[in-house]
Length: 341
Image (cartoon, rainbow, N blue to C red):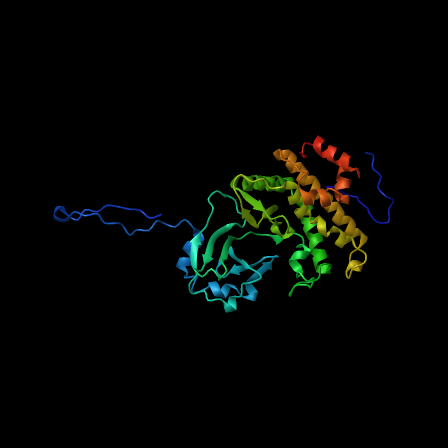
């Protein structure tokens, strides 16, 4: 752990460098072939549960209550399912209105990808209507943990610049406190949590899934298990190469750092210099452990990672970690460490 960092009221830092078919006989007098009506056993646990509990008729619509809302991103809203703690429902945020939707013709389709062995909050089933004008409802595996950091401004503001209904301001003290809490949890995670995280990205690459790194909330922090979980995936052709630098950009939520350190917004007086020092120090620790995990797993940052190279790479925490402000020296140090392409 990197300790003793004081960025305020101190001298500046100086750097040195399908179904089955069977055949039945009905006697010699009347031989014939009869197609068996036996269905192939289901291996989709959610569909089994939904059929046993008549979920489409007795639970689907009820799931979309304000009390069941777990969270919202830029495009989607996520709801918990009463009586089933293993899955959640995800629907389009902008054009889904449960009060105006007739769920009578919705059916469940098995979309489970057997190539994914780990839990990434991936789609397990899809609930759809034959009416193409009705939105599809995704059934996702539920993940545990708190959402990491704060969503980007695009997720909480309308295109007009107006704050979305139900959202608090970007500079609100609640957001700053959550940001700092997440950095503290991440910094205290064991190195194994970061090694496991890189293994998860390797699995996603092999199965052909892209991680949506634009929202830091797409990482979940399970403090009890000491693990960093991944949610929100898009299917691509396998193999796929996720950008590990951009993933770190999201994990550190570095885009929010300047807001946290600001001395001029509505909640700045509530954040002390010690709080600011701790947030920067914890960010450096996250960078250190993540970079070590890349070394342990033989993986690298890419200079093609736009968010990584333009924001995180140029940030004060990265400069402190690499002990230089010079861009060329930073690149060389990462190359010498074997973590830069």
